[in-house]
Amino acid sequence: MAIEEKIYGEEYFKTTVLYNNMGLAYHASGIYEEALKYHRKALVARKKFLGEKHSATANSYNNIGEIYLKLKNIVTH
Image (cartoon, rainbow, N blue to C red; front, side):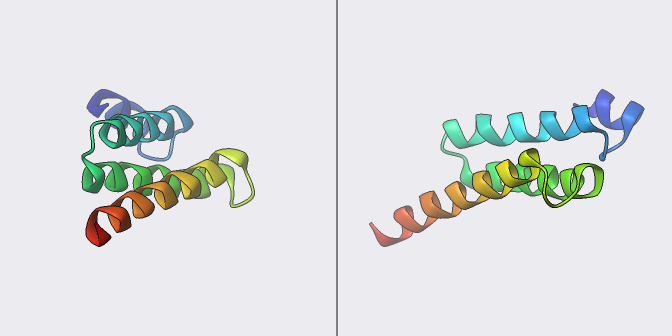
């Protein structure tokens, strides 16, 4: 990922896919704070690169929402 960021920058579409995938991997591992960090990075870059109404941007919002639900369930149980 560091190579992609260096070559293309944080707002390149492939970089946003990497951020999203890192978020998914951390989410699957139960490391929600790290997952949230990467999903937020993906969201910021996708909004800039693809716009607010793109399906990938919506997917980032969804992923962030899922993390917040997981965190809420941890706190309330």
